[in-house]
Image 1 (tube, helix red, strand yellow):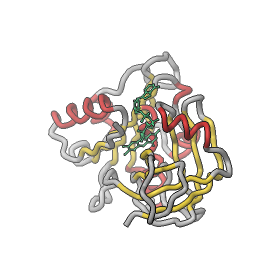
Image 2: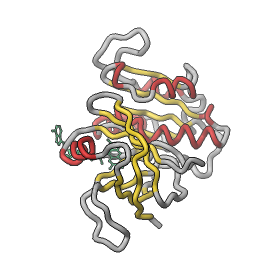
Image 3: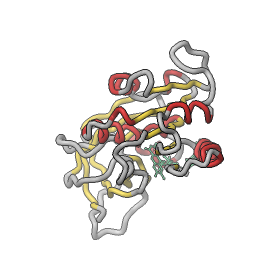
Image 4: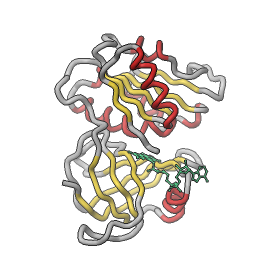
Length: 232
Ligand SMILES: Cc1cc2nc3c(=O)[nH]c(=O)nc-3n(C[C@H](O)[C@H](O)[C@H](O)COP(=O)(O)OP(=O)(O)OC[C@H]3O[C@@H](n4cnc5c(N)ncnc54)[C@H](O)[C@@H]3O)c2cc1C
């Protein structure tokens, strides 16, 4: 069952003018699956109140001993602008969590997990990394991560620390850069990244166009394990 709780903002990290990372300490900390999401409201309410305006954000961390939650938020519209203006270190927000079925395979502990991230869509994959690391299965994960420019990659030092060069493929679509592949992710990149591509699990999180494009391309290969995280 979902929990409604106040959460204190322990820290705010500014990645770019539009992207910030928030570390929250909820009063009530509950188990959840990597890849799930929460609802965040700026109003102070409890479970008996009418649920106010809120927005959905992926849990960018897995269940941990510190009992904190990481969120990565992109400022795009009205409510995220309010979050950027109003939420500081020490602020309190209300969260309701955890929801979603964009989660790691339950019955398969063997085959590859291929993650396709467009921009901020990398967010749920941070929790996948933490969960798989805890299970000693991080070598199953491949992350194909596309951003417009190199500076748009989020937590790149962390990703490079956790994933080797075969596991982390970086693509920039609007900048020539020696560190990255300078084009969009192709179907071949995806299929070739998996050691057993027919049995691998494909997780896609980006814009609607990004998601639908890859869903179509992978379905055309008769791949069966395809999961989408739709943000819009
Ligand atoms: C399962 C799920 C997980 C999600 N996870 C995350 C996450 O981890 N991080 C994250 O940042 N978001 C995430 N989102 C998206 C988030 O919930 C909000 O929808 C998004 O932040 C927009 O909220 P808003 O109030 O800022 O925009 P709104 O004002 O509600 O506007 C809605 C949409 O209109 C467009 N829009 C509005 N104003 C502008 C503008 N000035 N310029 C350009 N476009 C505009 C944008 O496309 C925007 O998304 C997730 C959504 C879902 C469903």
